[in-house]
Image (tube, rainbow, N blue to C red):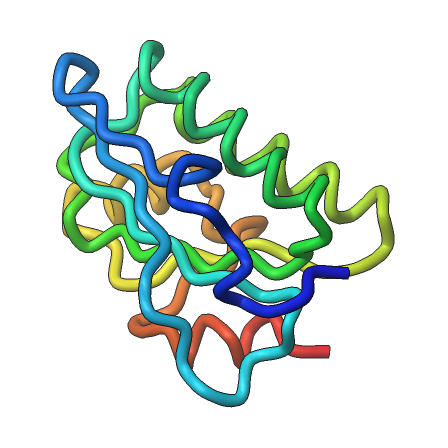
Length: 139
């Protein structure tokens, strides 16, 4: 289990890849979340190239003991099938472990439309804000 939500070194997780059009950051974690929860913010496009980085970072968090991932996607302009696959792979790994979950919140209209069209909203929990996303995940 993770020590605190702030136990991440920025070198471990934060990733700016302007050439890939994506930025990953640890966001402010609201009070009341357990120590094994982390709030993330993704900015830019999630595509074939940036999805691999995102998957590495998500799995690193899982390996560190974080089992609740809440992902702010309000500034994600685009997500393709490889990006959706990262969320599904993370979801699958958490289901197999029997604990935790992943939820997105504040998806941009483009991302929300893709989640609806692909019917992934039935698997990936989607909230309008971090508090709602946590309610969808909380045990």
